[in-house]
Image (cartoon, rainbow, N blue to C red; front, side, top):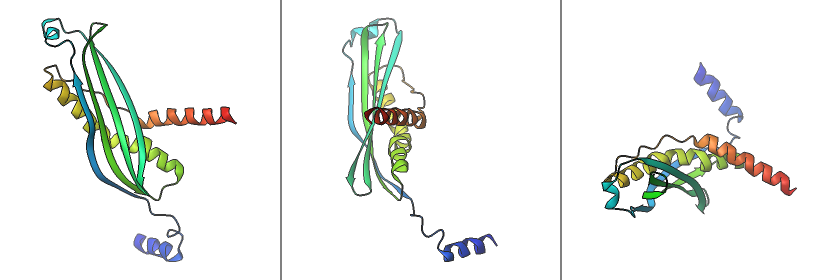
Amino acid sequence: MAEENQNTQGANGAADQQPQVQFTLQRIYVKDLSFESPKAPAVFQSQWNPHVNLDLNTRHSELQEGVHEVVLSLSATVTNGEDDVTFIAEVQQAGIFAISGLDEAGMRHTLGAFCPNILFPYAREAIDNLVLRGSFPPLMLSPVNFDALFAQAEQRRVAEAAEKN
């Protein structure tokens, strides 16, 4: 019975008028990777009292119509105490996404929140791996709410547009 209703709706054309949303993950890759420990090996002789500062950024560009590159940049700066930089681990985790059938607001949300959510576990693993290879304790980054970050960025964008008018 439910199938009959769906088929009838499709035959009437009501459902056929909405564009079909398509989303395909084509590739995930590391665009840039860096680890630096300026105080090594002396840092291994001191008491471990880490302070972590995490910078996070996203950007995107259209490679061709309907195909976008999204880059999630993570930079973890860890100090021992308050001033001495113990290490800096950075990654630019990127993905290529084929996206079509979304309106402008939906595309902004997809590129600004949904795609970074997909990339974050890969970036988190890359940072953790770099830190371990530097002979430091694991750096387990907490999950990030990209939807909330995107909503804040949208509020700023709307406020700035209102100020210009």
